[in-house]
Length: 125
Image (cartoon, rainbow, N blue to C red):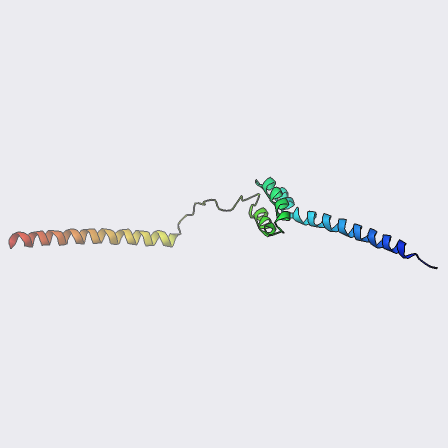
């Protein structure tokens, strides 16, 4: 059985076209991963992440890792995680604060006594 070389050329071309199409779809799928993450997490900037993913294709994928991080930064339950949280001081801190206030009062009374002595000496001299 003899296969004509021209037929093998077309088979190779067909395989090449199929592989090229598969690679294009693979690249598009990979670049949509940050958008899918953002959509799943209900990210407030998901459309911007999606547009930046397309821009990343033209920038040779340089910003794609940052898009992945950006998509993961937002947590649907906690938001961005930078909200201010009121923290109650510990009992030890409160005790130290009371001691500090007592020392400040002592310093004030001692300063007042010192001022009175100095003003008394100034009058006598």
